[in-house]
Length: 301
Image (cartoon, rainbow, N blue to C red; front, side, top):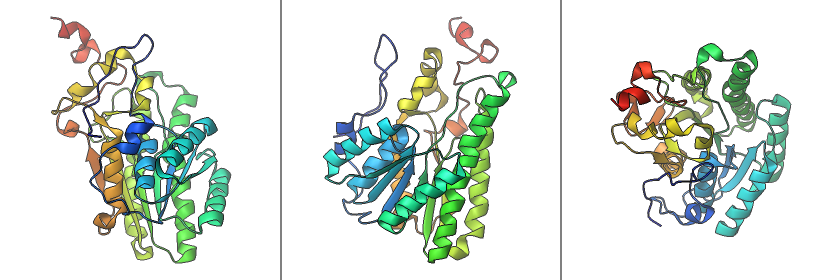
């Protein structure tokens, strides 16, 4: 199947986003079928959205895929689809990356079955659009704990096991384009910026251990995550980049494979931005651009 620009169709409730399982199973890729053969790839938040796309591509390229997340139903549905597409059933573990004890148990189970992890994709995360001045204490702490602390527990715990085994490792964290700030998403901006500079620091500290640490920053990527944003914001998302279109989960999946394959062996401490040039163009307003900044009223004038 050829990849096409995503389109938001009309829907009485919410627009339908993302690729179908069949599309993910047949999407054309630039990579050879055995690129990740027998490697173990762990994708947090692998039951939906970007994580699901990464899991599909890794499995199609021969990897032993493990997905984890809070919703077992989503994990099982994704495993069913991956097994149908590849003939191999991934391992799935329902858990929360916010809980260090659950992270330890996750790795216990993976190492018992596979004996190792070659690549960790820190994809799990979440946020909600809101003006920063109105954040509740609970809302702020929840986003920081998930996006920053959860990523840290997943990364440090695995790095310690790599050190114990004398094994090399590869960490890829899915973050966000935070260079110019993220109005109406200050909580995730703070957390993702923390992950980016944490990763740069770890890339240096852990180089003697042969552990690479990189980040991938998606711009406006059409996925299931779009469902948390109001229609007025979705209608303008593509205006935030000079290419005037949305990306998709396959753009991110193939970027991650680039960092997992031999092509990424000499890359560490980097931030790969995939945003259609958004960083050079302007900010996304996830709750809708305010009138002050040229919102809907000025658009009609």
